Image 1 (cartoon, rainbow, N blue to C red):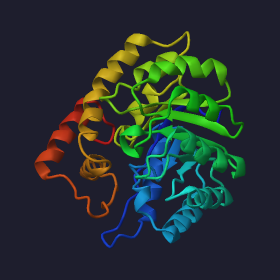
Image 2 (tube, rainbow, N blue to C red):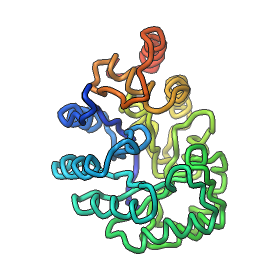
Image 3 (cartoon, rainbow, N blue to C red):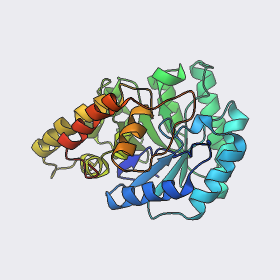
Length: 297
């Protein structure tokens, strides 16, 4: 995981109308990402509606999807309802060949810093695969402070960090102290947590927008070095940003799936209580995607 570079797409999970998982559609979405230059797939994230899966569905998903492993890196969100529940999911993902497990704190608990650290460390101690942590205060009710992140990144099995807070400048502190950790930027536009991490040396971008614009996010996610064309990055970011803002203006993955389906990409149904956008709302999104040069438009 520490050697990962490029676009890590939080791929959506296509559901049939009856709520079952459409594995044929998912295979097509994986193919689209492979052809678009994506470096890795991030299954069952918020965009993948992972929190809606039962234990049996989670087990079936990992067995079916990971057994026919693509050439891309395959990470799985394994956040459960409590520590042992998350660990169980990590072990299932490991059994089926996941390259790593990504975790946030369980929903609605809002643990303090010490409790949060213990949660991640307990799982990292017992996981046979690398662990990634996602600091996501907007959804998880806990915002990891600098000392806690430093403690966690010192664990040899915690090898990826994605920070959803707006305090991404502190990556300048973390990166030199933890050279073996893969630091990822995020495509949430209003928090401005993409450009700063990329400038500071992030390995790539973990995005939901890559579902809709795989080629554009693959280009945007190239790690910066002395050969980086800053003007080309600025121009591409300026084209993609309105699409990001549009997608994030709806609860994930409502906008993403609605636009993907309109583009002919088999994103499938949402799970209730989520419902798709209106035709008028989708038309706005399609215009933005076409303006950004979306290859599926």
